[in-house]
Length: 228
Image (tube, rainbow, N blue to C red; front, side, top):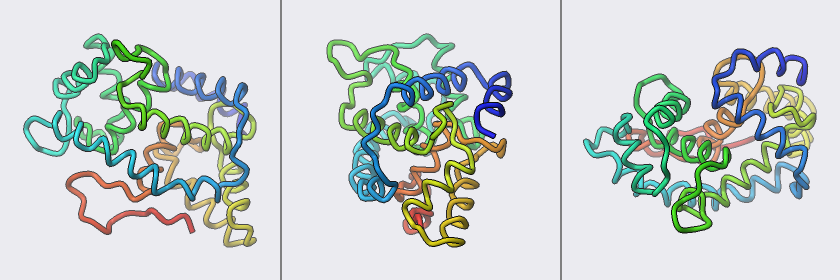
């Protein structure tokens, strides 16, 4: 299912999605994955959640009108504040790519996706430092999540299939039908566009729920963070 379907889908991808699939496939080919089971990664959830939350102040500062989302101009100014330079057209592409619910605004969890795409696509570098987006702790988190994606992506094609997801969840919870059910459930949560394959963008966006991250307007306690 993986490679053949993935090749067919590449013609339907946006420019950023296509670049991201290629980047993750290349990372998978080169990576020396140290993650042995998904349970190992689950133990990192609190640390990852904390690194996400540390960026909320950046988001809130960028949200000039306080409506809980960033429009194009607010995102552009935010990236300038982070000393990350892109053209207006490129910022618009990142804004559109990360607007998962098509609301025409970037909410906090979608902002995490924006920063991940910018970091993992590797251009540009943050002015005056070796940090790509000026947020080194968050960048380290993105590297850890990318390693988890590669752990799932067994055939190294830049996508995660349902079969690959079920296999990894079964490794974490070897409980027969229950493990299979959980794997299917998690795959359906991640397959945002329902095309039968998970891209890194979808993986990361769903992952923000797994660790319990919330948008500013969401009430506390309303999340799907458990993986079992």
